[in-house]
Every structure is written in structure tokens, then in C-alpha cells.
View 1 (cartoon, rainbow, N blue to C red):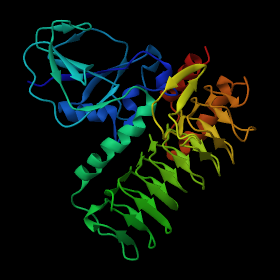
View 2: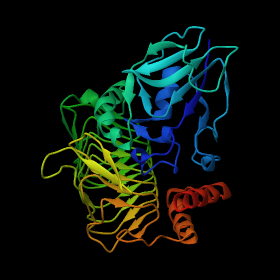
View 3: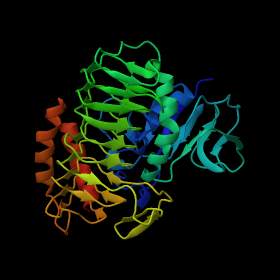
Length: 389
């Protein structure tokens, strides 16, 4: 029996900064795929609705299902948590209420026909499912190490040939090209995993791509060494990058190291922006989100950068820096470990104005052929109002 799929966001919390309240959290990238895409592959059905904060209704990104406030769900249905990235295919589900768990944590609910789900059902059967628990945005980094190798291996199949003049270190069968334009002088290192370049990707001479690595459609890679990263569509990347997630439509067009970091959509890193991803003490990284401490338990963690945030040239980001959505970071070469949403300058209490933020977005989005329609403008205004309330 086919189950309708619904995804449920958690309540906003410091661990989900800088994306809580800015985008549905199932639209974050875990490995090469969005969390929503992983649930859809797991269930074998497209998402019917995403339950998230009311101001995210009419979320304007293409291909995203309707975003609504929570309401009762009639079976047969599966309600999945946006804090879990499933792996593989769902097992056969009994015709009874089922609580899906992973390592003892609830990650979803199966609702049989004739039953309406309004919340946790204490008498439901328990079924353990494979996947990756996400305790916060920072867990997208260890998830990358666990999920990306599987993702790129599954993408291997019919590939365009590696262009003449390129070098392959490792198995040439682990280079997967789909209409990518690759100049001579590019090095593919597949000794640790495949390299997959989707349609329209451009790679210039002097680039070293070390797998496991995935680059989404129409991304441009302009030189440097990239390894173990998932780069969403329509990005521009240059310089050294390691173990990093790009949601898409972001710019790192200049030199500068970015490691163990998560970059939201429409982020722009100024030339020479550098992230630190390891403390001098080699100890676990603690985040500071508006005065709330978040213990990540991770030794390697760079920066978490929200949608539409921008850094000036020569910006140095300390280990575990969190930059809020829409922030414009300049003046301070090394900004504080937490930069609030829509900050203006990054080293004080000044904020961008609502109109100023919208004017910048109206200049930026068309550069990637994304029109600023009324729905986009209204969404941008709502996330600004929610963030600075």
C-alpha cells in the first residue's frame, strides 16, 4: 500500500541556526541529497506537504512541495522527521500504527488507512530504520562523511569520457560526467571515492577534484583543490575546500580555505575569506548562538553560514562561527563567533534594513536567472520580519 509522505520540522532551536525560520529544515543537504529527497527515496513517494513555521508558507524555491502549518494526517501516510536522513528503502509497514526509530530515537510515524495522526501514539509498534540522526546543522558534517560515499557510488553508470589532457589518479570508472565541460589539466583523484559532475558543470584547468565529491548542475569550478564535498547546483567555487556542504546558488569565486562548513543558498564569500576548522587545543568545538552554548562533540567544524549572508574580502572566520541569514559581514577582519541574522558589519548591533535587504536580493537573484517575483519578495520580507522581531 502506498503511503503519502509528510515531513515535520522541529521547533526552532539554537542547534538549527542559522537556518531555523529561514527555510524548511528538510531542504538542507545531507550528503549529495536534500533530507526531503532522502525521505522520498526511502518511501518511494513524493512529499505531499512540509509542516514548518507558518511564515514559511509559499516557500518559493522550485520543486519544493507545499509548506504548511501542522494539521492532522489521515492514513495511509508516513510522517517523517526533518532531523533524520534515512538510508535505503523503507521495510514493509504493517497495517497498524508504527513508530519509526533509530538508535532509540523517534524519527517518524507510519499511519495506517482509517487512522488519523495528530501526534505521538504511545501504543504504536516500534520499527528501527537505518539512517543518520541530525542533532543540529553541525551534524551535516559527519553525515557528509557517512552518506556522500554511498551517494556517489550509486550515481555511477553511463558516463561521458574523461577529456584528453586530464589526469585520473585511481579508478577511471569512478569519474562520472554528465554533460560537464572539463578543460585539460584537471586532476581527478578517485583513490578515496568517486567524483560525479552533473549536467552543465564547468571545471577549469588547474583544478584537483578528490572524491568522494559531487557537484550539482551548472556549477562552475574555477581552480583549486576540492575534496569530500557536496556542492549544490548553480554555485561558483574556487580555492581550497574540504568536507563542505553547499546548498546551492552560492559563490566562493576566489582563493581561501573553506573546510567542514555548511553554506546556505545565495551566500557570497569575499576574496580571501578563510574558515578555521580545528581549534589549537584539538578539542571539541562549541558553538555560541546568541549566548546559547551548543556542544557539537566535533573536533573538526568550520562555519555555518545562513542563506543570503555575505563576507568582505580578507574575512577570517574562527572555528565554529555561525553567521545568520542575510548578514553582511565587513569592517572586522575577524568577526565574532556569532553574527546575528541581517547584521550590518557583523561586529555590532547594527542591522540591515528590510528594504535594503530586499534591494540587494533583487540584484543578486537575477544573476543566476532567478526572477524576483512577488512570491519571492514576500518570502524574503517574512524571513526578515521573523528574524529581527
